[in-house]
Structures are given as C-alpha cells and as structure tokens.
Image (cartoon, rainbow, N blue to C red; front, top):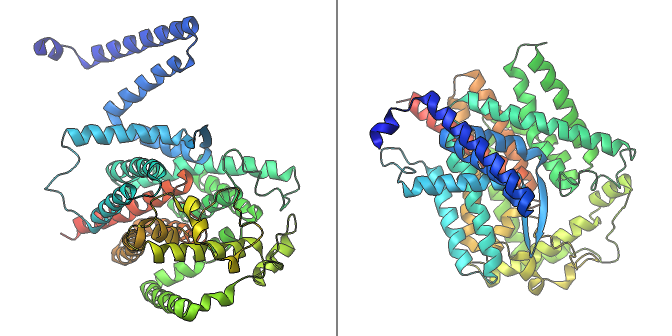
Length: 482
C-alpha cells in the first residue's frame, strides 16, 4: 500500500483532492436540499479549512487577521456568545495545537525558553486553578476555554507564523484594509445623524458592540498606520493608501467621542519621546512608586471616602458633549462616579478573597455583595452587567493577588523588554516596527485602566499579537548577538 501511495505524483494528488472536494460539494448540496439541514452545507468549507491547515496554516491565520475588524458578536442564548468568524477560526487553531501536542511537536528541549513563555504558562495555569475554586464554576470554565483558544492562536500559532518582519507587514495590511473600510462605513453612517454625540455609541453596531470598543480599536491601530507610512517611498500607491487610511482612522477617533481614546492617542507623542530619549523605564518605575504610594494613602484610614461622589450631583449628559466634558473635569460625570463604586467593591473582594479571588469572569455576578452605598450612583443597578472598568483590578478581584501580580508583571515586563530591545536594534525598519507595536500596546494598557477589553476579539487579538511581536524581536536580537 505504501509503495502504491509513493507512486502517486503531486499533480495526481491535486486531481484526487479536487475530485473529492467536488464530490463532497455535490453530496452536501443534495443532502441539504433533501433533508433540509442547513448545517450540512458547511461541510465543504470545513474540508477546505482542513486541507489548508494540513498544507499551510499561515493562510488560515492571515484569514483570521483579515476577519477581526468586521467580526460580529452574536448572542447564542443560554449565556453563550461567539464572535463570528474569528472564534470559529480560533477553534481551528486550538485543534491544530491539540494535534501537535498529542504528536509531541509543540515543545522542544533544544529551543530556548524565554521569560515570556514562562509567564504565559503561569497565567494560564493560575486561570485553570482559580476556575476550579470559582464561586460560579461554569462561567469561569467558559472563560478558561476562551483564554485557551486565544493563547493557542495569538501566542502559540502566531509565534510560528511570524518568522520575519515581512509577516508583520502582512498582518498590518490584512488588518488595515478592512479596518479602514469598516471605519469609513461607520463614519458615513454617523454622518447621516450629523455626527451627533448622542448616536456615537450606537452607530458602530453591529460590527462593534459599542462605541468604546470601536474607539479603542481605532486608537490601538492608529500608531500602526502612522509608522507604516515610512515603509514606502513618497507618492507610491502604498504610501497614498496608508495616508488616506490614517486620515479615516483619525477621523473615526475624533467622532467616536470617547475620552479614553482621545487621551490614549493624545499621550502617544509623549510615550514616543520617552522611549526615544531613554526615559521610558525611569518613568515606568516612578509611576509604579506613585501608584503604591497613592494606594497606601487611599487605604490608610479609609481616605478613599474623600472621593465618594454626591448621589444627587452626578450627571449623564445625553446628547450634550460640552456638558459631558465639563462634568468629567468637575468629577460629576456619572460613568466616572460609577467606576469608583465598582473599584471600591473590587477592593473589598480582594480583601475578602485575597488568594484565589471569586473566579474568572464572575465579578459582575458577585460584586454587589461587596459594594459601599457611599459610592452608589443612580446607574448602580447595572442592568447591562458590565464589570470593574479596570482590567488589572478585575484580575485581582477574580484571581487574587497571584493572578493580578502575574498579569501586571507580564504587561510591565514586556513593555520594558520592548524598550530595551528597541535601543539595541540597529536596523531602522526594525526599530520603526517595534515602536509602532509598542505604542499600539500602550493604548491597550491605557484603556485597560478604564475598561475590560482584552477579552474582546478586536482588542485581545492585538494585545497578544503585540506581546508576541515584542518577543519575536527579542528572539531575533538574541540570534544576531550570538
């Protein structure tokens, strides 16, 4: 049998595979029409995906990147939801990982293990452990599954797909083109409402769940587009496309009317200067010192009560951008006041469950028992079931000190690692790419102080990809300095 298979030429194999695929298409069309089971029609797509994975899963990975900007978040009922088509493609890569795991090909003792790998493993292990101790096991288990296929795709597979800066450039274009088209579509839709502040949160639907996710995605990709301009000579087609796209993305940021996105993009020039002038690490260390001192002050003698909002004076300015901004600066804007309410609840959860927390993805089901009425607002009933409005604090509340410290250490460690690698690089193109990735990564971290977006496919995918790209530059730098 083996001798017979060896005699089959590559051309004959292609004919056999195409014939088999044509037969499968015919059979599925016949079965779909006869038995009226529409799901059968997906079999040819699954077969093609399987062949592509066997041949070269880079193609599927690039398809996934291309799908991210216009993926749709669908509620499936029973508390289940899925991002189409991104999560089904992530499941394909989960299957690839499992096959390679069973085949013993995913790890090699000959390859150098970097701190990045160890931190990812520890974070995944602790998520698994706190799932077992969770107060709502099923919710935590769903979170764990999603975390596994995100890491399998955007860490394990991405590390294998990205073998040179050419791959990073491909990722840029595959994300950039659909993102610009999506932003243009949303801007045109918003223009029909006169770019009104009141409609800014709803016009990104259904491509984005809300305006915050839309604005954060624009903010994180703006530095990518800005620095990609330098890859091409002036007045070439690519140069014009990137400049036009950058203008569309910036226009989207402006008319999204999201303070977080405005601030995230606004601080990027300062972050750039800090990196260039070799002050970035010093500012990070100083920031951590101020953070710890600030926390010590707030927790000493319950000084955080000085920041309790007045229930009657908190304001939501529907359709009034000027009033919205004024209330923000005066500390009377409702969403800012509600954040204090959630943060105090999270602090109380950490105090009560310091080691393992309440379990991944359980905060919005548990926190009401830990709230403080002194910080209550008139939207504290939380009908939309939003969470902590701070990803770092949420991790501490849900996974205890160990989980919170692991995640916090990963984010800061990779920031500093990217900064030091940047100054070791000698190739200007490599420096350009690493800078753009780090600045996009910084916008995600900035938004993580005010929201929890890393579990959203459009943000989370770029978060893990950014870490992998920083890690890849570390690997390439280590190889060139041997």
